[in-house]
Image (cartoon, rainbow, N blue to C red; front, side):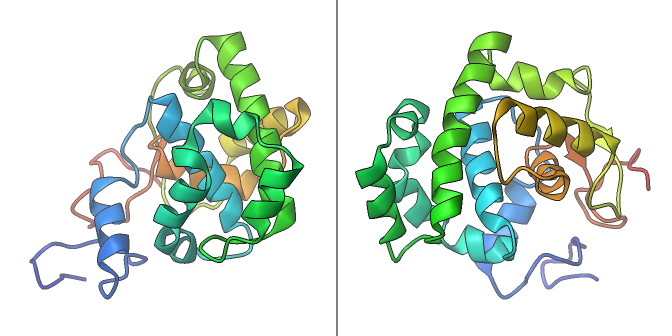
Length: 189
């Protein structure tokens, strides 16, 4: 579909939501190698479970405020009182299990980063540093393997579908729809 600005975009991009449109055009599928951004996206994707990404994205600034800018060390130090405060914050998704998982996952994220030199090195190591081009999937052997390893290490809310969405979001998997102005020429199916 051609939009008012003359560009074709992925069918999921909502033209009525400027924030969502900017996310599609400027962030989704762009390879990320910064651990801070990888951590933020992992937390946000885990909160998406059972909800729409648009819902989470609309609350992103509130999440940033509530989770101290996604400062890994600060999130790792959260105690029961902080988690209870988060559960009472009307700006974010107040699911106690997801909040607890975010704190636990932060600690595992830090452990992986220490073990591998960075979380980016760990994540991109699964593809040898290459971007995977594929479309029309919600999971793959890659997301299965990463999900299994993260769960083995103690993370939760990182099932293969969530991990697949995460990999798309941080550009490990390039999956823009065919015809989208951002689709890579070598995108597969």
